[in-house]
Length: 120
Image (cartoon, rainbow, N blue to C red; front, side, top):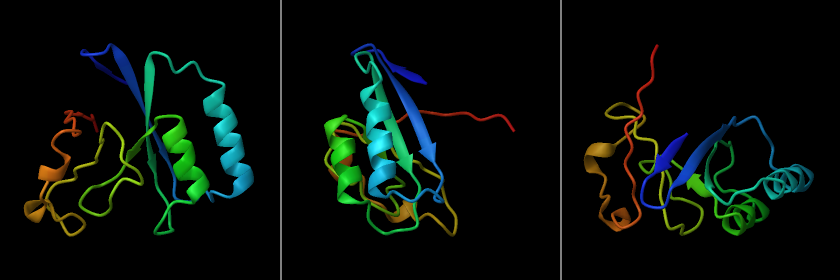
C-alpha cells in the first residue's frame, strides 16, 4: 500500500489472474464487494490480467463508478477509461516491452511514478 502525501489517501493495488472470466455474475459479486468497502481514505488500483483484448463494458463501468485506477502496462495497452491518475507497470527493456520508443507525454499530467522494490 502506498500513501499519497498530497491528499493523504492510501492506494491499494489489486492484481487478479488472467484465469478469471469476467461474466455478469462475477462482475456483480465484485461490485458488491467494492460497495461494501469504506473508500473514503483509500484508492484502489486494479491490474486486471485477462485473455480478452478488451474489458467487458460492465467492468469498465465498475472501474469508473468506483473511481478505481485501471493498472496497465502502457507499452502494451491503454487504460480502459480516462482516470485522474495512471498507474503503470514498467518492466524495462526486453522482448515484452518496448519502453525505449514509448511517448509518455500524453500521460504526464496524470502519471505518478513510484519506485517499488521487491526482495527475492
